[in-house]
Length: 155
Image (cartoon, rainbow, N blue to C red; front, top):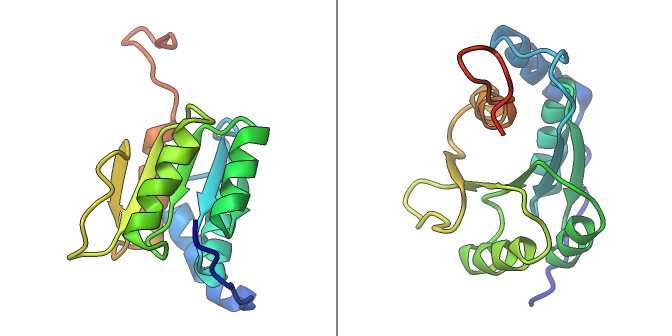
């Protein structure tokens, strides 16, 4: 595992506020049952934005900025979804997913950039060029309870 030095970047609230408006326009509200999301990225500004976006929709979010931190968080708590950011080099994303799968059973949503190979072992893929509102919509669709036509939860 390589160690990458990360830098902290402050993201002004004014940059986040428009994204929160987009989530309300997308019909997402905090009435969702709280689900736990592990967000893993090497880019603090993207990670902070993603954390605020998911939290604004009522999700409990833990962020990891390094491979080791992601592994520790996954081993220590239950998560309903793992979001793997596109800022992590593809080879490290493969290793990260392999390590996390050995420690938790949550499905993985991998963000990717156009032109790069997708993370083949991820449960879900998402083009990072899409808007934050579309990312939130995808996460909501993944995490919403599955129900039968009669409205009863599917086991």
